[in-house]
Amino acid sequence: MGLELRHLRVFAALGKELHFGRAADALHLAQPALSKIVQQLEAEIGTPLLLRTTRRVELTEAGKAFLDETSTIEAQIEQAVASARNAARGIRGELRIAYTDFAINGRLPHFLRDFAAAHPQIRLNLIFMPTTSQHMALLQQTIDVGFMIGEFRHKTTSCITFDEDEYVALLPASHPLCRETSLTLEQLADENFVLGTGENWAAFRTRLFAECRSRGFFPNIVLEASNSEGIFGLVVAGVGVTIYSSCVGNLPRQGVEVRPLRNVSSKLPVTAVWGRNHKSQVLDRFINLLRRSALNENKQNTSNG
Image (tube, rainbow, N blue to C red; front, side):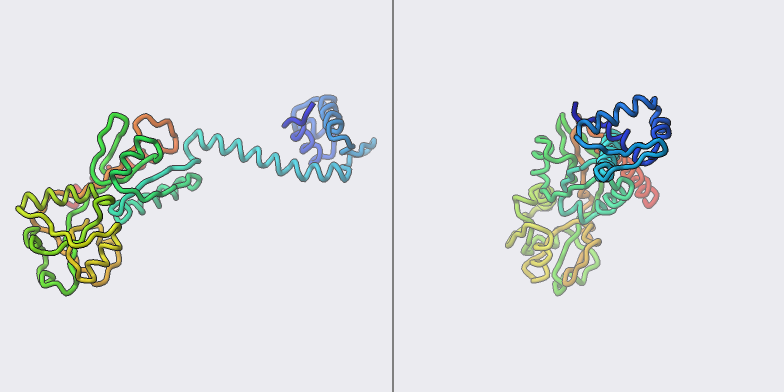
């Protein structure tokens, strides 16, 4: 015969009530049907689970042990059912989220905090990944959403501008240009530069080089680092200057001076990109909050402007 869920539910009710009539009523079963299920259960296990008298019903030692174990199983089944329903409604699951230095140093952590607070059963798996690597990961569906520099237009993807920052200059604290409250990009033309590597910072370098070329120079790159911390360290050491995003204002920094670039009007956009044909209710919830967040950010920027 084999044990079935109905056997566990009947025995759980009977173990609680210790009365065939009340257990049958609780389960909306006829008492003979309940008795038959208990008999099948005892036959399957091969030992009596109940002591029956004309006045009362008691659990045998075997019955007590079986009830303890089955109550745990029943709770797990209920949890499994709830988890499946939550997953179908998009309130339980996992999201694989790729990010760049500029995204995680901007307002992305605040957005993720708000999403996690609203959906505590959705696990956020955060993966550092350069912009160009995110392109491939999205096409291969190894990430669900990426926060990258610039747009990624493809027939299988959708995107929204998540954040926009100004370009700023980072100088060693002892640099003569620190006397200025703002700079032009041309004032840095003869400086030594430290930048992120071509492998990890390709998207940013492409934009920066275009700005420099339009002003008649190309940065003299003397050293490279793979991440922001390395770049800041080289600036502090006086190796050179660099251009970064204004999100640097969110980071603790000693020995680095930040100056706005008054003649660079273009912005550094952080874009959220995801697969257009996904079928994830969890990702739908994430995208809906993304759209609301972007709308609120635009309204705030408009009012400040």
